Length: 332
Ligand SMILES: [Mn+2]
Image 1 (tube, helix red, strand yellow):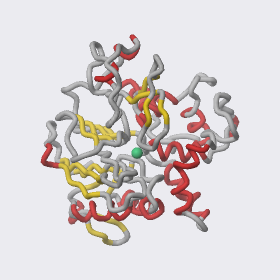
Image 2: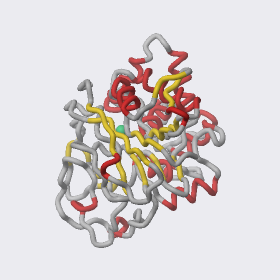
Image 3: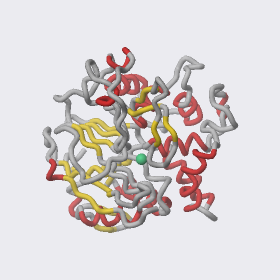
């Protein structure tokens, strides 16, 4: 694989910004896909192509064309996993996951329908193409690892990577889809071969339940009783405020449960890791010289987000000068 790679964060149906960013990075449209001159660089998309924005179909088709042309690798995001689960009948292929209510692996509740509606709308009158889109999503890997870097939608965890490597599973295409997606939703290990833990860590990252009545509202106004965790800092002596990673939300500096203090974390000397997922705001900036989040909320409701990339050339210490971005053009 090339070591000259442009990593691109969460797109969420913001096709116009995606085209503008690719052009800013020097990619041109030739023979059905965006490619870099002389194929000297490629893109790694970090997941979350669908939902929120209004041009989901166009976005998916562009990403898929680059993947098929060999000018990009497209990783899976939690929105892709959620969409596949949303449309997958619970029990299909023979295993019913009993902790999931309703007829599908993702419940069709108000919030879950609301978040997915832009995707369905963008395929209105094109059901066959929608089904083909779902088939494309089934092929997206959960993570990518080379000697130079690691990349995934949310969190890189060594134990989860080892677990999936031992099973020979890098995507839902590495086996029977009906079986693998059931295992990925088997939260309480009803069948003894659950994949819930590694898939949810790679795609959503570690979270913890909030106790003592602590809650907050996320960017979409949904009341949350769980928080996302910084998985790159040593949790041994850290408190809730230091460990929670909810940009724009400050939680109290109270103690966290023992199992959170004992969590593995991504060390300072590991190879660079690239990811999206976390709704950052402001100008792109490294979290640490080996930790690079590229979700700058292009689909944020305030309309002041950005679509961000990091222009990587194999360096082991990342550089704040190597971000490239475009501003969001539409609020939704
Ligand atoms: Mn996202």
